[in-house]
Amino acid sequence: MNSENIPGKRPRFPFFIAIIPIALLMAAVVQWLWNAILPDLVQVGHLTYWKALGLLVLCRILFGGFRGGPPGKGSPFNRSAWREKWMNMSEEERARFKEQWRQRCGRKEE
Image (cartoon, rainbow, N blue to C red):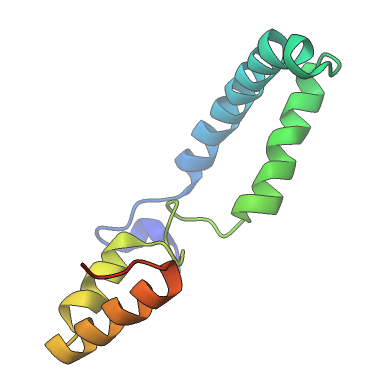
């Protein structure tokens, strides 16, 4: 089914057209920051533009994946999902949850 026929659903193609120039611009920013800071600070070599782009892709693979969609969606740190879960807990479940986190984090109640 074509997404143009579904009311309220935007086509995803223009999103990909916008991502390419943003990624290329980000590679230039990474290259500039790397070459401005790191060679003098930690004695590493200068970074070329293509290596900066490769570094961005590598970081995306290692830390972000290629799930698609907005950042944080499906993430264990999705605040709206945690908020909804918290709101659906009973008072006893909330107290038990707080106590478990106190034990994990080492906080003592005063």
